[in-house]
Image 1: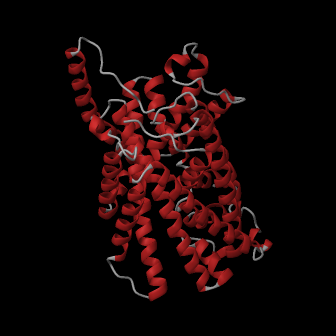
Image 2 (image 1 turned 60 degrees about the horizontal axis):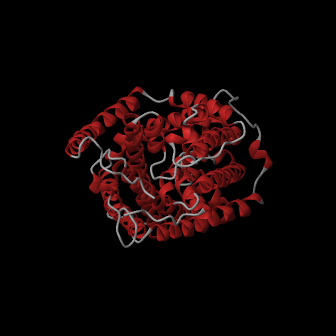
Image 3 (image 1 turned 180 degrees about the horizontal axis):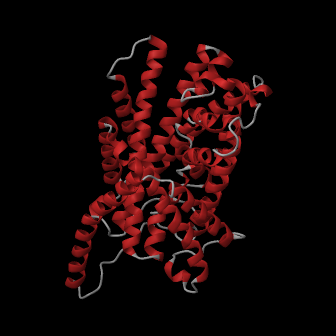
Length: 446
C-alpha cells in the first residue's frame, strides 16, 4: 500500500517550524545570557548560519530522491546498505529520545501551570499530561497525513502568534541599558554559546524524512527548508532580543522568558507564557509523531527491519504500526525517565546524519552516474560544493565537543540495532535463493 502525497510547501514549513521550535526558545535565553550576556544575539546568528548551510545540503541531496527516509535513503544509495542502516537506526533512536524528552517537559510545564493557577502540585498531573500529549498527537496522525499536517499547521499558527505577541508587546519595554556592556565576559565563550543555541535549531533534517508523502518533493523540500530556517531564525532572534532587553540582568536561568513576560504583563503574563510553552510542546510532539514513525517505516521499506513494521493502512494511507510502536516506546521512556540514557544519541546521532549527507552532495555532483543512484534529477544550488565543505567543517567541529560517554552510548545503540538488521538480511538472502537468486520486488514508497 502506497503512502499518499499530501504534503505541500506550507504544510511542510508548518511541520518544520513545529519540529524545530520546541522548548529551547523558552528555556535557552537565560543560559545564553549566562554565557556571553547580550552577545548571545551574535551566537544566534552564527548558529543560524551553521544550521542553514547544513539545511541547504539536505535540500540539494534530498531533491534527488522521492522516497521516504531522508538521511537513511541518501546514505543507503550513496554509501551502501550497511551505512544506510546505521544512519537510519540512529535517526530513529535520536528522534525517540528527543520525543520522550519534549513530552516529559510538556508534563512538567502542565504541572507548573496547575501550580501557578491553583497553588497545588498534584503528583499525577505530569504523567497524565505526558500520556495526554502523546495520545492526542498519535491519534491525529493515525487519521491521515493530511490531518496530521493540519494539526501541525494549526499549532504552528498558535505558537507563532503567541511569540509574535510577546515580541511585539515587549519591544516597547526594551531598555538600551540592558545591552551594555554587550559582551561583559568578552567573546571567548561565544563558541560555547553558539553550540548551546545550535541544538535549538536541530530538527530541520526531519523535514526530509516524509519525502514519500510530498507533492513535487524536488521543489517542496527546498522551499520548506528555506522557509523553516528563515522563520525559526527571525523568531529566535526576536524572542532573545526582547528577553534580554526587558529582563536585563535578571535574564538568567531557565525562567528568563517567564521573568520577562511577568515584567511586561504581571502574573497574567507569566501564566500566558506557560500556556505558550504547552502549545509549543504540543506542536513539536505532533511533528515528532509524524516524522519519527516515518523513520521506522523507512527502515522497514528498505528491508532493513521486518516488513510488518512498514505496513500502511489501506484506508488512511498511514503507517499505523510504526506510529503506535514509536509512541509507546517514547511514552515508556518519558514516564520512566530513561530517555536521559539516550541523550547522547540526540546529539551525536544527529551529526552522524549531517556529515554523510553533506558529503553525499559532493559525491552526487562528481559521480557521472549519479542519476543511477537517485530516482529524481534533482537541483543544483549555487556554490553548493562550497556550502557542503563549510557544513562538514562546522559539523565536525561541533560533534568533536561531544563527551566520551555520548560516543559510547551512540556506538552501543548502533551495535544493538545491527542484531535485527543482520537477522532480516539473512532472511532476505534465503528468500532470494528460494526465487532463483533474485531479490524480492521492492517498492520504496510512492
